[in-house]
Image 1 (tube, each protein chain N blue to C red):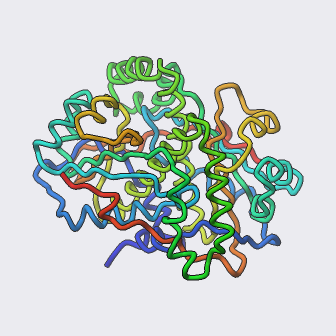
Image 2: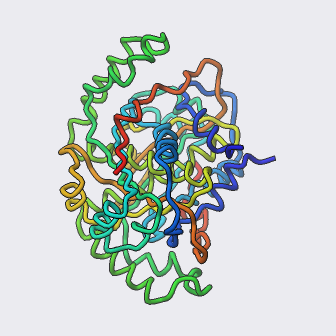
Length: 204
Length: 204
């Protein structure tokens, strides 16, 4: 018997049509983000922030920065998923309870901190990590939404500078993806076609 | 009753210890990547490639470029997940069967192509998309592995230029993440602690 997550991955679509009459409670939004933040991040940095827009006013402000896409407003909530440029100084705090519980030796945590310092000295590598962590969180949010009976749509077509300005992002925060979550309206597309495996997989 | 994917997200760990005696068949590797490529990508670009290393020789070559991390070799397979700098000219081909089936009007596909051309003219935005798509694929690979009874470990600490050279990546391909997949050996850590929701979630 296959695990139900396989069917969930197979059936997920990027929804275009949402039930505009459906709202999510704050508790449901919190549950979505609690699950999203179970995603892995390098050095357990958790260098992300989730801004959940649920009021019509907030969604309209975002929609105006996202080519006017209707789903930004029609979905119950649209998240701005931000990555944060990694700071190696955060590592001891992110791992403290894990060290105290005896799982991770202090020396290993120190080595991780030094590794992170070296790795993120390059600005491109640092930005890549912000994009990667936010995307790992967004992907997990998408599957969590599906598991909770909702549909979702990730979006990258938006004015990033406008989002930074309009929603007061910090200077180390990068808006990486928008994710609309809500109840599907009728008429969504099926999953789009995928490339043949031979085009995208090499086994060595 | 909650969907089993929720428990799967909650229990997933980044494994450090793998059963070095366990191998994956090519069919299992193909199934993992078939599922990974169900992840969403912008404009359905599917701008990714998965290089699965399963021979001891191939894994050793990668391990030498990844700070000698033992799990690169001990896992049954370690994937190099590559993002590809997006090319808007790919869009008609990626959507052709969807257009032919009548789901997507030709005019919409053309508008998407023009949107992608404008969006990816900036090199940083283009690179961001390579990182984002590869990460969406890697995240889905991680959950697919978990659903198939395996454990996984994403890794970002590797010599990217060395990987490009040693594994013959194309000039538009970016090695975004390594993902080790296999059977767990005893002694793995539990999931690392997560930040409080109040630190990472804002509801507006």
